[in-house]
Length: 252
Length: 119
Image (cartoon, rainbow over all chains, first blue to last red; front, side):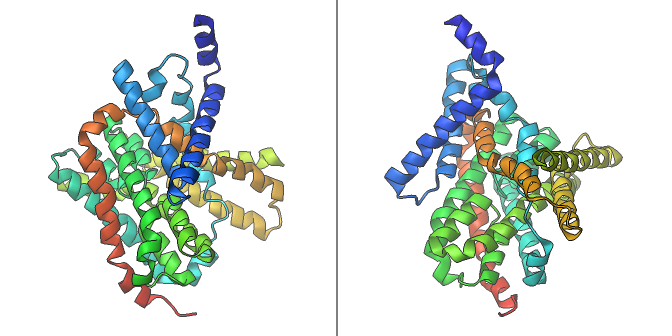
């Protein structure tokens, strides 16, 4: 038994690919069977990751989720900042300034408003619930943007792992809410043209939630919403650990 | 060609992150200031520039594309190594910080739609 665990730890990254693949396959199945694809498999698998980390934490009393379990150490590398940031940067490919220019200044305005308003409301809620240091507040405000901006900001500012976990959880809640809510609210907010989809993507961010929600509303709108949502993550990663953090430090 | 795409991505990553780290030092804080955002900007700009000059090969795009497809699996792995046990005691915060921003932003949607150019 022990030599197997040693083997898995030695080949940790490959084993992490395998386990993540199983988690995602299982989540796709749940999505299809129990929600008729209403909640996307990606949102479920991220949630499953958090659940697994929770139970691993109960078992080991460690701080690194399932990476603390024997044999699972490779998750620290696969889920660490290097691969994460590398993969996020890659999603920018294919985004074109020309298309976003077409929607004019209002597309850019929606991006900035989306990031700043999400950030501010996240910060206010965190402050109201008793969090007071600038790094943690900024991280949770960033998590209110997306589940990517939160941990990127938290890592950059040196926030603690539990604060980063809250920021991810907030982003996941947002993603699920946007996914389920978009088709329901679309008729009331005039979400039916490419322009409105771009504004929507700019305000909401959360690429997976926006794409899935728009797909359920009208598949033709997906590329437009996803386009601005991609910029959102970039803008959030740019603004949260810099300008917005400085503002937080100046206030506190 | 495939690796050239990965190398381009890596170049943008390194340049962006080092710029972020340098900016952090310059501003006197121990933090990476917007490194990922800069790297994304570099990738968009360099891809557009290479395409304009006809130097962007399809296979290069595939090298980058692989990593963008790995994005969700990596995020799944990332969420599974967080200190969720401690975060759980703050579950209400995560819930509220996920819901309220969506409502606040949705409220702006009709206003911004009015400002949008018509087809």
